[in-house]
Length: 419
Ligand SMILES: [Zn+2]
Image (tube, rainbow, N blue to C red; front, side):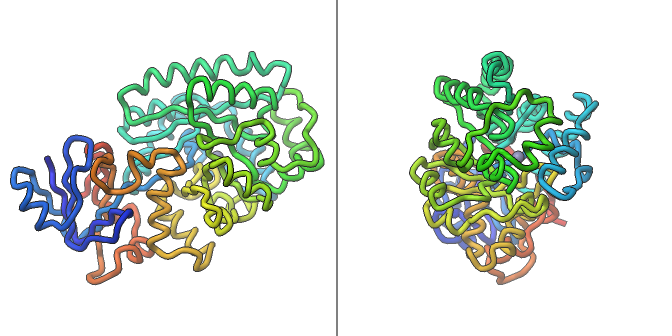
């Protein structure tokens, strides 16, 4: 047994504990409380004093594409969302497996060094699944599926479905869960969406889909026109375009296909009507909020106040390095705080980056707070200012350079000695 103690422990489900401690046994937390009490009750445990530091649940990055780390800094946003997608597809051409593997390794190291313990990862080729498996990080790896030819939906689905089954076998005994990600409404045909849905239910998988991200997507579903129809689809090779369902919103369209349920993570969710918000709340759908990516691509800002007001579980995601500068959730939460003005307090932002992420990925029974029975997934940040409020300090000052410790399942993945 191990007792970790620090100037502050932030359990997140209860107020900060000054001079707090955690008792860890194997992969789980056994007790949380004042340091003196835990040391007295468990004299047999090994003690480790983190000193002037803040101990909190590991950060949860609910949406990334680690394989796209290979395009770090290479995909400029251009004039529109469609420009960006076209550039991305062009830059990906000719990249080999090794380049992806190396980029994934670098991305994972960046996550771990920034105190992230869980990731919601969309993988298109499986390289990130293998990298994450080696890393010891926790995560849900959603296998991406793309295909627009409705008449070939069955054939298109065969290989990815088999890949999901194989990854599930390989994930046994690891902190990884495998899910399915039909990419987006404009890249997956209605019949393929239905097949993904059936497979998801049969195999009891979590699902993730990009939806309501750009004005172009809204226009495509409303009137079948615009840049997606005119420029993107003819250039992609994703297949014949089925007739778009006109006059609908992305959320209403997915709802009509029966896709939305509590296991579904909606990525971006920027453009939502009042009816869309009602549907999301009733379906208990989860949302991945990616404020820096949304800003980088100029698609708009998600209606966070309305989402939270309706009780929709929302976590923060960096998205990939093709639309963001870093994979650090500290950068994301700081940007979100600025972008959304005074919407949430520092404590509420830290809660979104931890418990909110766990809820969004459907993992909140196991992680997201420091409480007895949950997994020992945590991070520690050096506290540089005596007497600072720990939540304010984290929001203003935390960065990968200040992360002292990243632990998943009671196993330390990263440690930095105090200098
Ligand atoms: Zn994405």
